[in-house]
Image (cartoon, rainbow, N blue to C red; front, side, top):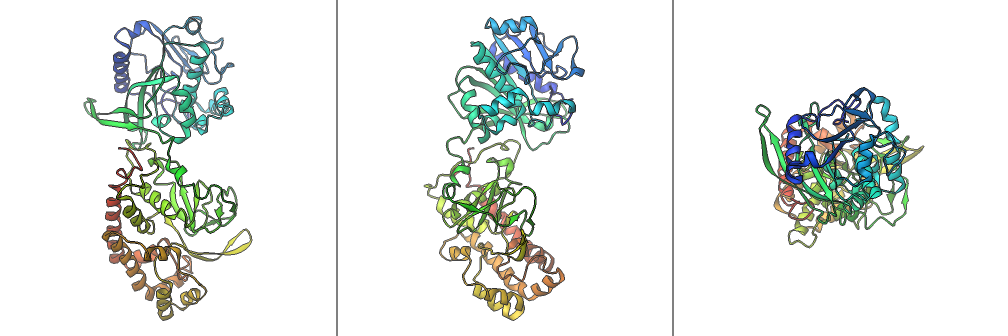
Length: 536
């Protein structure tokens, strides 16, 4: 089957990358590989990977009847009756190659989606989602990667190697690089790396395929029989000129995993054994979900909730946020006084790094907290965590959740309640009344008062405080005009609640604030690699 098509699989591996893969195979297996090795493309599609090369013993199979011809036979590689063997539908000579321990090469470009999400024709999607290989992977508790179609192909090849005790079996595969890096593949890697060793490979932009996003990369990797002892894998980063199609190497890319020290595990240490309770399920700073899938929960003494999605850079934009109550879909951790500094540190480390197709699958690691610069950087992350577009902390009053009324407090508020009370008494009496109901300062305000910040962090904080103060006079009117939609009568209303008001009524001041904040983030980004969150 050809590359990643939502329904029919009719995207083809571009010829320039097919030729490049053949060069790598030739360098690894030597010039006579087309004579010596029995080659099987077990997800062939139209046969684009091998149609322009003369291979003595070539077998190509596909799941789709419409792609079958004189040189391609129909065979469901993932749903054979024997999970760890080969069935009766394959040619006799190919089956003999396994029984006689001949030299084998799987040259494949399987679909890259999850089961049932793409790569196979629509009529086959349902069957693929419950094929025998994926079921076996789940039974063996391989992990969530059991849903990844290309992982299923690799697992079946692995089982064939073990079943027939093959001494010279090789894999040349186009795929996402996730199986070499993602936490969800950790159990898979233990088995795969015990049977196959990485030899060589390259990385290129997925947009080289028609109508595919340019945000991620495709790897071609070659694996030979043996054990892979080095978890860090280095690929050549390749590019082609769109006019001349001339191939060039633009750098090297380290592919690594975080199996031993992922930041996602580091962040949960303080809360993983604590009891949780149900609380308003938030989908944004202002919206509460009352029905459907609600997986979020909180622990006692909570300050908020940290949505910390998949542990790689590709999830930073959409799956990393801060809330004042739990996030409806879970996938995160309660924020408490004990893990607060870790949370703001990882939140900043994820938000400041800019995603590229090359770093897309890089995994976040436990940082080097002993580094000389870590403490100051961590302190500055407190300020960064307050004003990000995904800082959804908020202060809400009389919201309804499961038939009851709730007040949500903003523990991340950054000013003295008494200062806000004085301003409210003068300009916004409803806010002043709300202030009178509050007994304690916000946790973050107290934290700020005892913390030393860098000059640019102090500058951001001062600008934000100034905006709060100068805007109190107009805040009451704006709140009335918007029917208290943003709960601006709450004395500890957050940046997420105030930014629309500021953008409309204090354009220049807000513009200056955002410009300074972005510059602040650029400075923090430079230290993420130095502190060990990511590897270069």
